[in-house]
Image (tube, helix red, strand yellow):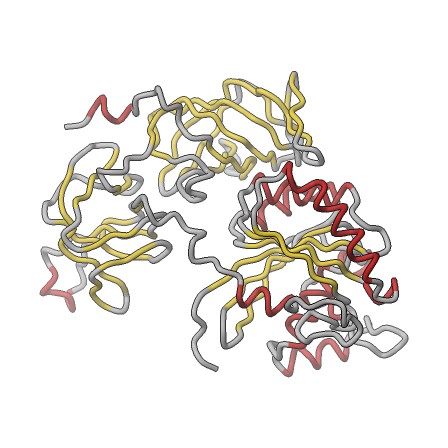
Length: 435
């Protein structure tokens, strides 16, 4: 197999028993992505249907409770590759009480696959997951109308469900939406085209996943490099690098080239890029999401938690933040609580100063006056940090525009947040202490 050109992260979601885990199992099985021992384990398992078919859902439903109840509870990740592309799949739960798990699995996805039972049509949970995908700014959406074999592969039923979903689409900020009729149990239109749907002329699910364009999903116009590590080799074998000082991290946005002007924030010191290094050697340029080490012309003061940016495209900075948050913890979020806020490579103390409203994730309507946010709730909050952070709005950069809240004392991750862009009239606070 040739090396795949790029990596697509996608998640599956939908209501309980819509066939999410079976669909992933069918993708892996029919694309020949399973090892022999995995197939043998499935054949030996007690979960074989009366018709003698392997229960492909067991490839992702690994918890005993999941197999007993026939539902997905935790997020399961699977990797596979074809000659055209590599994939990481997140099988996320469908039940409303596991909304937080769906948010966790979808937060890094390029594409979301929402399954709709052809017998039931578009239900509230279908709309809820479409809303969450929109809130998370997932660029691509596939509506897989599953169990088409149970409605005799009716074209009229497929078009009816498509019309139901399209009525709801204007409320979502999603421009790339595809509809595919499938039968996950039998494999129709999953990897191979189905002879049962001659009226459907589009690609199979795998064909769409292999061809969807994701190159423009990254923000390539504004360079951002959160510094993870100051690289100073001290191994005796690297004696020739005794004066080497590199700034390592993953590019969160934009493109960087040799000779380019660079600014370190929040200090405001400037320099130029002298060298760009990766594991494979020196580069003339690099782009998101590559992991690199930059060597600058000057030894300016930069440490973990700082961010290297293009001086011509500065991010926002401040300590008063406006954000949308998904609450993940059984103990509800209340105004006045103190937490650690982890943003890119730095962690600061923070306090939630206000809860503005709760969001109805089935309709995207605001519900003002909420005194707290319970587990699985999504709402708008105000946060004050102990020192300014450098950030972008989540809509323009999903890496520099996101954060998590960590409970002090237990170190439990209790919330996942998406930052709104700074107000245009606000002056970035790092300008106050540029040297």
